[in-house]
Image (tube, rainbow, N blue to C red; front, side, top):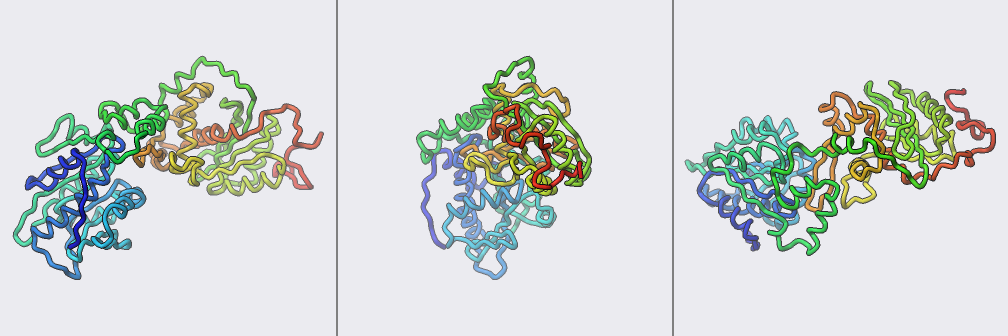
Length: 458
């Protein structure tokens, strides 16, 4: 089998020695950004595979024996991050990857299942699996129930040999079961090795500054991810808190320019279709519809925009929103109409996974800096505090949880919050309000241009 030489940091060496010892154990490694967790994961996986092949005296076979599992909470995250790190770190002549089966085959002798704990078919297979080890990256994302089914697989016995069973978890600080088992209680045969960015000599010299810039609006997360403080985070990553919103009470904002925008988050499946008119962050008018007819929704938007002399619009164009956007473009040819697809690439792709993450983070920053008036609507405030986020790489890249997960926690879709956040995100792109409607011909009602009539006047 081919060999590869690597140089480990002192913390990685300490972890590696535990993970290759004859003791069955669980190891939590990490606790901050930049601690080179993924590198340890990949190097130990390959080294332990070689050790097990030698221990069991395995030969090449058309049917490689499954020895373990490596993954994350979500399959997509594993494929986008952990698997890419593995391919970058481990030479290709050491393994074969079967994408269809989500298997990594080593030396034609053994295989490791990989993917996400959200794959129910894979979880069902675990009920009959016999493993010698498993690895979970970003384990703070998991629940104890996710891990229980994996623990039950540690029962492999091959050629009358019982190996030492190993559990490796890499994680950032979080108020979760890991903190209970490895730090607060410290169960038998459970080890925690903290690894900070200062333990990684391969990071850029300005990495501390990178972390501090990434989390300057959230000192709790900064303390956790820079300093590895597991006591800093008391709950799952809540982007906007009630305290942040309460701090907006009583403030007076005097902007240099008046900026006004109409925002619409169309509804699906019985949710609210939210239409807001927002001036410098303040909701000045609203309309909640339970309507899927794009022509009717476009008509209501035009009525409200005429009422408030709105010339800038932002429309969520996922799903039925595209039809609303197209109709407004047809009727309001001189208006400033923004199409927003939250799944598209962010303006700053190094910091944000997509537009959704970017617009929510920037709204949080404005709330934190007290640049937005206090939202009077209690339901809007409740929805603003519902979404959670996570950091997906060591540079602090932000990913918002899927909207469906927020909906499950909230009991409803956060449509008001999404409409509000869309407006805050696009408000800086609008022209300052000039009360005389110079973009229309004198006396021409908004919604009529070149013979086209709005749905409400047709």
